[in-house]
Amino acid sequence: MPVGTGGHVTPQPTQTCSRSSQGANHLPSNEELARLNQDLMSSMAQAHEYLEKLGYAPTDAWGEKATLSHTLLLLALSALANILQKGFQAVATILEQDATVQMANTVITNVMTRLDPVLALMDDAADRMQEASMETRMAVDRLYRMCEETRDELQRAMDGMKEEVQRQQRGSRRFPAS
View: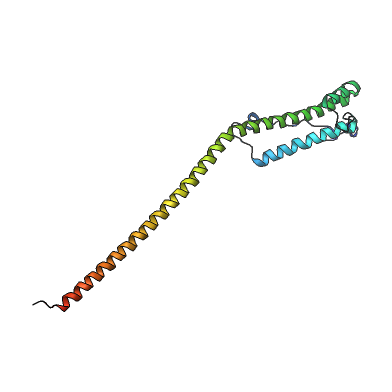
């Protein structure tokens, strides 16, 4: 945050980044989203620091930070005119960050709600594919064993026929044709 007159830190309003400000076809990249999140987080931390430094964000009886409504009340009742505007800007920055986080959580919840049935269908399809793959593998194994058995039977039959032919040839040599 830039330093204002009198050595006070001046909270800057965050720049809102919406689809309408980016153009119709621009989707922010992961890096852009990370940078925006970091900017929002740092401006919110600076706003808290500014309010604490001036004493408008005291801690309550339990050691927790005061609520924003209490901070606004303190600002409205006891702040000088030049600090009042900066204090309101700091509170607005904090509220904007809170609203952004709540909206992001809402969007994430909505997306996950829509994705859950799709993920369940994909899981079911994967299970069915696994099952089909196992059944196909078992069928291929059975077919392979059946082919081996058939080959062995054919080999035995051919060996038997070969022995029979050889026996008949030996038998025909003993008895020459007259």
